[in-house]
Length: 350
Ligand SMILES: O=C(O)CCC(=O)C(=O)O
Ligand SMILES: [Fe+2]
Image 1 (tube, protein in one colour):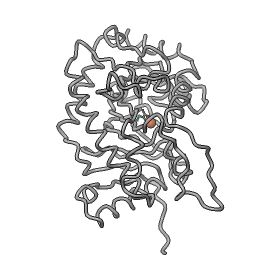
Image 2 (cartoon, rainbow, N blue to C red):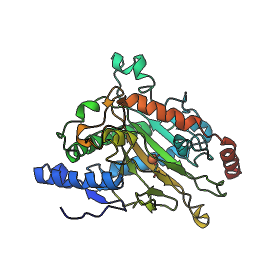
Image 3 (cartoon, protein in one colour):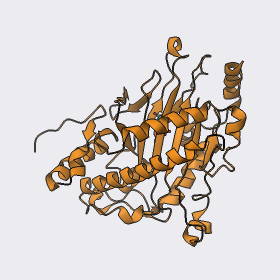
């Protein structure tokens, strides 16, 4: 076997050969994806099958939501700290808190939803173990199109994450449908993020989104190419920009997938940096992020194919739901120099 260079930049991979369905095409895509997940934990995908028009409508309606008056957005505030659905204003969260860091909160606001069409009378979705994972979604009454368009986008993300998990299965030498039963009642989250213009300089250590890794199995991101964007930390320890190519998505693996693969694949640190000061008043950015999270009761144990005598299982089994809840509570409760962000917001509004 020849020496294969490790990727230090995020590769772009066309999924078309997988979607056409030939054995050869599927293998080739799985191999490229496996290498990206091993080397850098991030990839950019084209040929994903999500209609461009839907992506654009989702983006446009999300921008309109963030332009609503603060009082209207606040009607959708998350009702409790362990619940992921609803609105978070600028200053409510710091992604680097999940790493135990104390830093000023992130300069972003967000709206999140979870699975739709949750059966009302099936106890699986409403028992104690289900916790807040299937709590009702909160929708803006003054912007009814948001519910329609987001529902359509969410369904496409469900389809695409299922395709990606099948590609992952092939890349890990498992049968193609191996992960299917772990995701048929998934607890994924879709979130739109708005990083406002920054008329005043951020505080020391304050970013649009502090360095973090994602929690779930995989993330599908539609990012916007404006100043102050996404960077990932490669295995050499260098922060590199993730290319924002129109029509593509950024895909990255999260902590749960890293654990599932016994650290063979990496859940990479990433962050959203501030725009340069001279462009900071024309740098508003909206991201659309789908965090794929398997069924709450799916047990994640290090895969046999990722273990060997000198690499025994590094993690005890854990359910997807317990893993997520632990991470989320950490993110919203540690840190807490909230005053700083409020000052910035106050100055922005003045
Ligand atoms: O907005 C982005 O480009 C990335 C956001 C992100 O990493 C996250 O919300 O986990
Ligand atoms: Fe992230």
